[in-house]
Length: 355
Image (tube, rainbow, N blue to C red):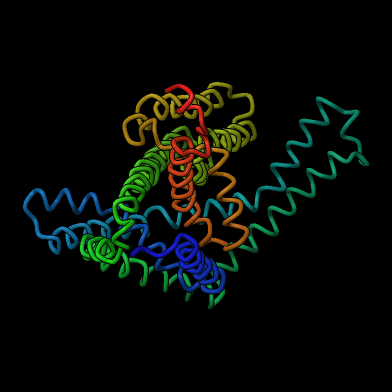
C-alpha cells in the first residue's frame, strides 16, 4: 500500500531541505565534486560513443582522460599565462582608458564635462576602482597561499572526481533507478528523461557553443591586433550561454577598446565590430540550431533569475547548480501544468456538460 500523499510530501520536503542546508554550509567543500560531476556529465555521451565503436568503458574513459590532460597542458602553457597577463594589463590601463574617454567627451561635450561634473567624477572613480579592485583581486587569488592551495586542490580533485564518475556513470544511474519508489518510478523516469534532454541540449550544446565562439572571438580579435583580444574573447564566450548577453558584453568591450586603440583607423574598428556581427550570424544560424536545438525550454529571464538567486544564496557553487535546478524546476512545472489542465480542478463539470 502506497504512502498517503501527505506523508510523501513530508519526506520529499525533508529531502529538499537537507539538500539546501548541505549546499548552504558545505558549498566550498562541494565545489570540486560539483565541477567533477559536471565534467563527467558533459563527457558521458563521448564515452558512450566510444563504447559503441568497440572500446570498453575503462578504455573510453582512459582515452578521454589522456585527451583532456593534453588539452589542459596546452591551455596551461599557451593560453592561461597570456590570459592572466592581459587581464592584469587591462586593469592597469583602465584609468588611462577612462581618462582618454574623458578627453573625447570634453572635446565633444564641454558643458557636461567640467571639473565638478558628476559624469567626469564617475568616470575617474570607475577607472580607479577597476584598477585597484581588479588588480587586488587577481593578486590575491594568485599570490595568497590559501588561493594557491585552493587552485591546486581544484586542479587535482576535479579531474580525479570526473574520471571516477565518468567510469561509473552508467552503473550509478542504474543503481539510482533501482532505488526509486516503485509506485512513482515511471513518472520519475519520465521527468528525469525530460530534465536530461533539457540539460543535454543546454549544458552540452551551449557549452560547446561557448567554447567555439570564445575561441573564434579571441583568435579573430588577436589577428586584427586588439590588445586585449584574448580577454575579450574569453569573457564573450563565457557568457554566451545567456542569449545575446555574450555578444552584447563582448562587443561593447571590444569596440570600446578598439576606439581607444585604433582611433581614426575606422577599418580596424569596423573589423572588430564585424567579428561580433559574424559571430552572431554563425551562432544564430549554425551553432545554436545544430548543437542546442529550439526546444530547450529555458527562457533567458528564468535563467538569469535562477543564476542571480542561487549565486546570492550559495556563491559560486550556486551558480554551477543554478542551470540544472532551473531546468528541473521548468520540467516539473510543465508536468504539473499538464496534470492540472487534465484534472477536474481545471475542467470542472464542463466535460459532463458537453457529453
